[in-house]
Image (cartoon, rainbow over all chains, first blue to last red):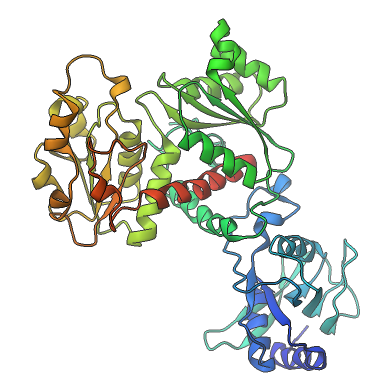
Length: 165
Length: 319
């Protein structure tokens, strides 16, 4: 399966553009979602720069798997009180990461609304989560043995890769 | 040799001492601590990681800072914290340490944070838990006798890394009462593991343990000579409560020779940082002008201590 991540990116920006508000802020889920949020920030000219969320401390598999090996900082350098938050992730799968990110966002304040933007919906949802903006929905859910992930080259070009476990 | 702190996968099961802990485990704790520092700036200073876990603070020796920062750390991780104060506990009625532990296990404890005047008490508890099939309960040493104070050593390393970036080129001086100091022992173990090329200990011979020269440190009995060109000055507290016998003339005399003053600090590098584990004895081991001066990072140490303890507890409870 081949993906043109750059084209999908432009498509996603096009979907979001008509719905921008003065209070719109972007928050990207590390790592792929943050790359995407940075790109959307450029394409859409949204101020301020995107915030970054690392969901390691909010994951529901901590009890089973322990702490993530390399947690990174969550950095939200703006007030989210009453803002229109667009939560950005590269791939929407079970919905558990989105759940964790939502919980984390609310520890920073009460946004007016939160919407989800993703590059690809690969199916396989385990929670009632849906993306408001989605560049590509796969016709059939991917088998759980496959991983779809966003990669960023040294020159900043985005690429979606399908990896067999 | 089996390290009783690690499980069979080499992951941290208990934190008892930094001595013999592999470098990558120490570095990993420091790496994990970094993202926890940000929680203090949030509106809701709480993470859900240890929700539903019960942590017992067992302090058989007085402490304000360590007990409070452990309590804050555990609460920021959403754990339920129970503080047992020895003066009001059954121990004063004659209950043994391990009986106390067994009773708390019967109350579904998940973790013990232990401070004890006897070296080895936390190890004894960890072995006892192991022997009774309770390896899912974790032990954190919050200071035992003259042996170790690993979380203090770790927060000191975090502080050094925060201000100096790297350990590879540093000269670090530890000054004062090394003999009674579990902090010094943990600091030396961590600095050595992290590859600090020169560790100096400075103080009077009466306050150095025998065999100090075998700990991989340079020994100085002249403070001015020892401080020359150092990047980090780690002061130790004069532990009057552990002293028996005439190890010192008077505190005033000690300050004159071993107290850190601005004049002595000027011999260190201009950007040297000054650390102290607290509580401060102003005018005995450190002059107020230094303790409150621009080079002191004593209060940041306390703040970083919360993040480091959050990292340790969440790494242990996740095993």
